[in-house]
Image 1 (cartoon, one colour):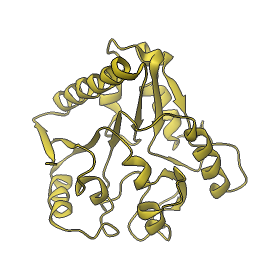
Image 2 (cartoon, rainbow, N blue to C red):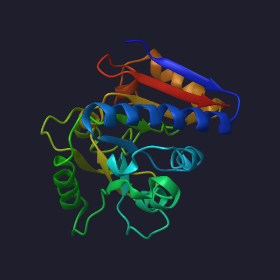
Image 3 (cartoon, rainbow, N blue to C red):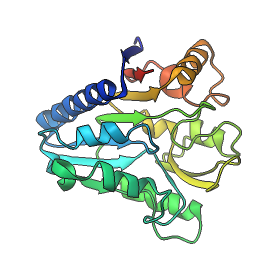
Length: 233
């Protein structure tokens, strides 16, 4: 199953194309099964995409949104991915979409991950579309190279959707992430990246197989799920 790359000359063009592409997959899910689901990522890169997507004419009340990962912070904290998604995506026409958070009240991140797994267990799978980012170290979601939990996040066979992971190089240290096996339970994957540095890193990721060194490889170098890269300079 060949990787497909969609290159654009500007961020605005990329955001619009990705929004239409995701919207079409959500519409397909609604038509075929009466509902659809998607996984989105945080950070600055998807903000324009979110703001385009939320204006599309979809049956948003039949769409469920969740996160690829979340930081172990309060949901009103500036670093919260939930806060970012509520502000930039779950507005306008998308305000009626169902949202499943990954951050729950718990004493530890590990307990929080179990609660998030339980919340996601009620969601029909596969996801219609998973949208991933890629860090300059090759991480995606909160699957970080060098993390003590990286092997569990990439290869865990327990069936739990979520895992507590540590980012040892940047605060906040603890995160809740969907595991690679859970993210691969999808009809479509999109990797959303910008800039020359990440384009170069994408080439490195495609040229090798050590997924613990560059975790994004779990999505790029697999044959189960169609994977599309959306990129601009």
